[in-house]
Every structure is written in C-alpha cells, then in structure tokens.
Length: 250
Image (cartoon, rainbow, N blue to C red; front, top):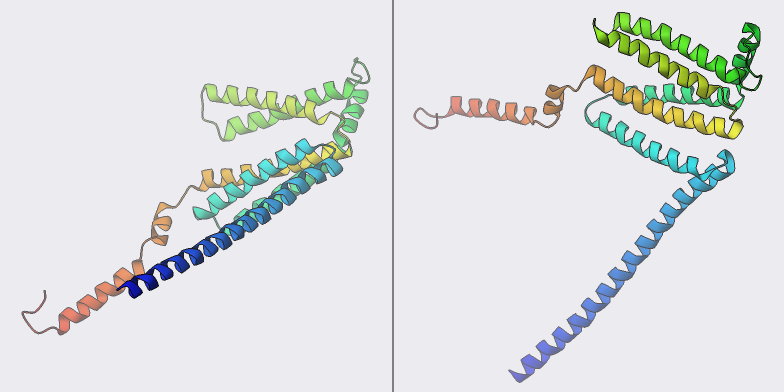
C-alpha cells in the first residue's frame, strides 16, 4: 500500500507539472493570438486614418467613413438576413458608388459653384461677387425643392396639411443643399464628401427597399421550419399504418 501511494503521489505530481506546462503553453498561445489580432486592428484602423490624412486631408474623414462603412455592412447583413436577394443589395451598392463618384467629382471640380456663379451673373443679381454663387445656390435649390415638393405632394402624400408641410420641407431642404453645393471644397474635401454621400446613399436605398417591399414572414418561417422532414415523416407514418395488421397502431 505504501508503494502504491508513492506511485499515486508521483503520478499526481507529474500530472500537475504537465498541466502547468499545458496552461503555460495555452496562455502564451492566447497572448500571441491577441497580439496578432491587435496588430491587425492597428493596421486596419491606423492605415485608414493614415490614408484619410494623406488623401483627404484629415483623419476625421477616416473615422467618419469607418463608422459609415460599419453601419452600411450591418444594414446589408440585416437586409440579407430578412430575405433580400444579394443581387438587389449589390445593385444598390452600384448605384451608391455612381452617386458618390458623381457628387465627389462635381464638388471636387467645383462645378456647382461655377454653375451658380454663371447663373447669378446672367440673372444680374445685385450682390457681392463672392457671395453671388451662394445666393444663386439658395434660390436654385429652393426652386428645385418647390417643384419636387409639388410633385411629391400631388402623387404620394394624401390630402390635408401634410402636403403643405411636404412642400415646405422640400423647399428648405433644397435651399440647404443648394447653399452647401455652392461651397468651394477643393479636390480632397470634395472626394471625402462624395464618399460620405455614397455610404449614406447605400444605407438609405437598402432601408427604403425593405420599407417598401416589407418582410415576407411566411418565407422567413419556411426557412426555419423543417417542412420536408415533417411531410416525409407523415407519409412514412401513413405507409406504415396501412401495412400494420388490424388492431395494431391507429
């Protein structure tokens, strides 16, 4: 018995040492994985901020674009989860890329400012030359908002006070957009604004698509309901019941 106890004590001691080595290896492996993940995050986040500072002139754009990208990916994952075809998500992404490129190119080249300046000169606005594009942008944006507001109120909004509110809201929105587009951004800020508009467009299009088409609850239920298994089991049970001797199973 003393010899057995000595062997057991030796085994416990050796197993404890082995467990300690295993724990040490696991801890070091976890540390290595954590450091690698940290390096990857640092590369992605730091690289994004560096590129934003280098290409767009400010790290703030990198933070904003990173947040918008995360939101856009989350929305895309959500709409795919509720049954939206991947082709429609890709189509809205393509539309958003086109919109972003158009907005970024127009603002980067200061095309709206030049257009408003020419319109103001042609209309003979009696304002200071430096402020003339801003005033013209306000007027043009308000006019476009008025036209769009009337069209929306006549075709979508029902009768009542909602029509007036819609027209007024679109006039204000148009004036703000016109004034914003009259600013001389320069290539870097214009590109940054275009990227921002692209992300927002993609998010808005996916959300509007879901709001318009709704969620097919029956289709979602069918994805999580073992219809084939249940129907096959019913058929098998009926087949067995027909072949059972009388009085057995019913």
